[in-house]
Length: 247
Image (cartoon, rainbow, N blue to C red):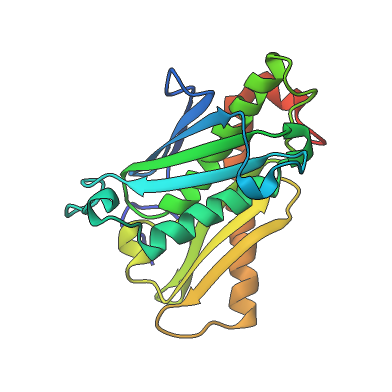
């Protein structure tokens, strides 16, 4: 079947990453994947949560939000409701887990890096775009600390990116737009490192179950897409990648 935007089933949407998008943050990036746009910023805080006091290592955490008119109809600000939604809480934790998985927290010392991911336009794949963009912001924040002489190295052990994949009308497709995501039979979000190791797999049979063979094919397609996204990350980061961990 042909996709609405003319892509092949295994094609990503057009990707654009603008590094250092915000002037005041220690690290930032605007990531655009198709019509989805997310601003990611990293802030260094010289303290850790109470549960990590005297543990001699740091923390990486995230907040995620969607602007009211990032969607087709206005979304009420969660601050107006007085609490964040379950979806927002889940995505925040996902981003934080993903970033901690490739960060040597002992090298970071007793510092926290806050990653703020703000969706300014949503057309599917906002959480995966946020992860892919937040990685750039995180690396730049750590590079800032490294250049300031506050840490001995950039404590990133690998690249990290994420992508969606799903089954629509029995066809496996990469990087779902909102229209595709809303109609798909199976919806998955995959987070993976540059070494091909999985950080998280979120998969749901929305209207019907899926087979082990379909799962294998989805994982393979997602891996190809993630490696392509990591290629974009490397191009954007340039010479910094020579200072990163074991990459």
